[in-house]
Length: 232
Image (cartoon, rainbow, N blue to C red; front, side):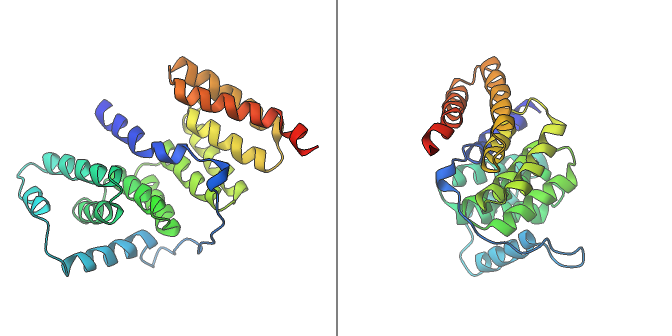
């Protein structure tokens, strides 16, 4: 269980490094109805259809022959992580889509697929993948935080705040969600609430000896505290 949590933390880390300078506005469609295939599923079907027209990778064939399902799961997840970290998003997508076709009830797999979609700016499929992870694992704080980050990337601040708050209801000491909700609160002119959230996040990161995160939060605190002076 500890290893799985570490994998999730490493994989979601790019999401928690959201800065105001990279925020863009991109509209998305409403969530699909229960009768319709989800955006994530439709995207995976397209990915797998394209993959069938290409020569199969030997490594994937070898993994599919493992007798132990847990060993196969672990290998596929590791392969997806490696491809993601290398910047090979199509490869990571294909691996995760194959993984989820075989293991559709794996919440972590859907969460990782959402990360890959988000990095590739496929925002609607990303939200869909995160929602599926939450459906399978209702108290998935990291997935709620991830949905909030997608909304924040579209400047949908109130929607983002709602998702961050859901994550914090599950885990009140979730430092990344506290930092992200502070950024969204600041954008909605709730400066005092933003500062309070950042102060709490700073305290948590310091207790966890996450010095890099603590330094980032300190910089955000200073930026927000001096924002009125900059405006005037």
